[in-house]
Length: 308
Image 1 (spheres, rainbow, N blue to C red):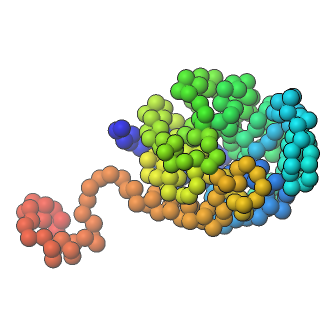
Image 2 (tube, rainbow, N blue to C red; image 1 turned 180 degrees about the vertical axis):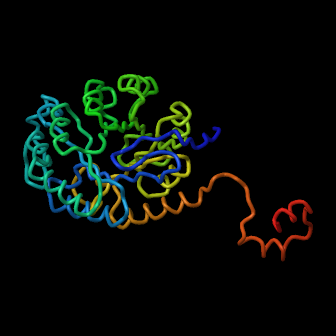
Image 3 (cartoon, rainbow, N blue to C red; image 1 turned 180 degrees about the horizontal axis):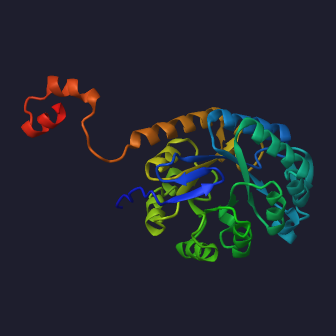
């Protein structure tokens, strides 16, 4: 597939941070519900993400009665807090006003943005009280156009993930909210996702399809290399689930990155950004001594240009 060149007009402003081609990858540490209802765990991940150099952390906000199918409410399951119904469990891992007020305070203190993927309309109203810089629609919500429009109606930019979705569903979602202040993330909704199903060339496909829209990558794979490769392929923003310990209880933990891994990921992304260059061939000053020692034949015009 042909590489889609960088476009300086492929930009969206997320509060005071421009996201787009050539602007530095916007790196999101997805905490989600990996905090398992513990504000202390959330605090440790926030502080770790800030130290690693991430631009933002992200949570998930749900109203359990709206997001849990009615026939699942009373299904019992074993949890770290004992045996309880699924609805009780969903409430156990939900943060309320007190927790999000502390999250807001802490993020301001350590200098990192925070926002949330909202899974229902009341959750949008709840998160809007904290004036987030952007909203995120999970892949599962891509076909919920009313929810997408609710988030877009706040006037904030909207990120959408495209896992578990067909091309028609992606197009319909984009049509429902419009391209203004939209960011589109390629994703595969398997946790963890095998390399053969990552399909990173979809980043090129989305960049071609939406030439003025920042395209990113939401990764759920074990390891870091595919996320770094996504940046080399043109992802303007990346999102990875983050945890304190991948062995902790929870469905997203195994597809998450621990803090040490997150630090390596941010470092490698910044290295790749610097290494990409501008695509214009030049002879660097650091090459001149090697050129002089090792080359037997010189083009006269080129040599004069280098010496001038």
